[in-house]
Image 1 (cartoon, rainbow, N blue to C red):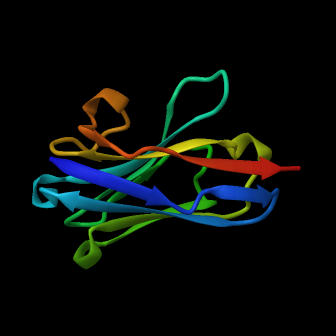
Image 2 (spheres, rainbow, N blue to C red):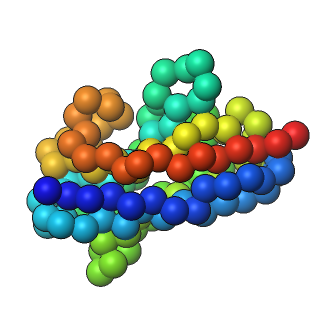
Length: 123
């Protein structure tokens, strides 16, 4: 099994920045991809970004491209989401997720999930 522990959520004003962390433990050697999803009130969960452990290939949703950066520290089994130029529409619960097999945007292809962390952006 894999456990994902998130941190870094909070309140920030529009234009500000936050950095989320996701620490993976357990059978992390079995993981291929780490990703971030978010779910705003009244909306479906949506893909934000993902990164491969080995090569560091990244993928971003159009809505966050140029503002958010995903990175990883393989030695620490930790993935980060640097969020800059935050907008009120970025307000959501952010979930860290891990996939064993697929570099994908699809929620159902991810095998493990963190607890979620609230990000609130005020205007």
